[in-house]
Image (tube, rainbow, N blue to C red; front, side, top):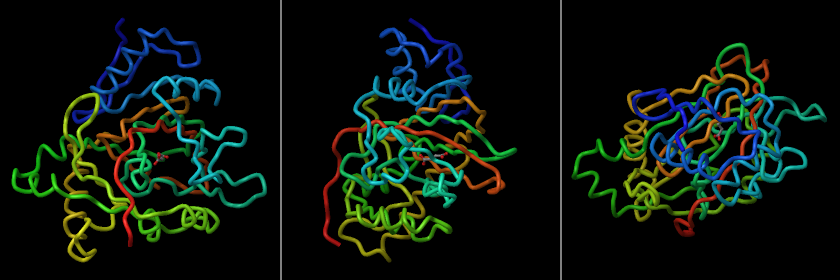
Length: 288
Ligand code: SIN
C-alpha cells in the first residue's frame, strides 16, 4: 500500500493527499501513514473539514493509548476526556478560554511528566483572517549539527522540567488554568539525548520549559539551555505550518519541538482540537 505524500519543507513535514480520516482505515493504509510519519516527523492531512471528535479519537487511537488530560481538565472538550480544545473562543459562561495561550514556548507535549507523548494530533476548526501558525523543529538535526564535544557532554545530562517555571513568563494565561497546573506540577528530570524507538536515531530532547540540568544551578544551566533551544529552532530546521480549516496535523513529539504563535488578531477566533498519544515512560522525579 502506498499513500500520496508531498514534502512541505526541507527539514521536516509532508502532506498526505489522498486519505479521508472520517472513514474506517485499512491496516495497510495505517502502516503506510505510520511509516511516512516516522520518515517526515510531521504529517498534514488537508481537507478533513467534517472530522468529528469521535473520528479524531478513533484515528488517534490507532497510534496508541491516549492522554486523558488529567493535568489540565479545564482544557477538555466537553464530553471527551481525551480531547482538548485549544482556543481563544470564550467559554459558555463568557469567561476567557483557559487554553487560549497553550504552547507559546518551544516544547514537546508532556515533556514535564514521566510519560511524555509519542505524538499529538491537532485539527483546525476555525482560524483568524491571517496567522495562528504553528512551528515545528527537527530535533534529530539539532543534535546532529552540534560539535562532537558538546554532544558528548549532553549524552550524560538530564534536564529538569517544572511546568510552572515554563508558564510564569507567559502573559495573559488564565488564573484558574495556572492554579490547575500548579496543583499537578512536579519536577521531572529527562535525558537530554534520547534514541527514537522506531527510527533508532538519537535526537535532542530539550525544550524552553527546562529550568536547569540536574546537578547544575539554574544560573549555570540557563546559557546552555538557551543556546541549545536557539540552535534547535534555527529557520533551516523549522517547518512553519500555515493552517487551513479542516487540516489535521500529526507530529512526533519524540524528535520534534513545536510552538504555537500568537501572530494574529486576538479578537478573532482560532479554534483547534487536540489529542495526544502517550509514549514510553521516560525520566524520573527530582526534589527541588
Ligand atoms: C500545542 O502546543 O499543542 C498547541 C499547538 C497549536 O495550538 O498550534
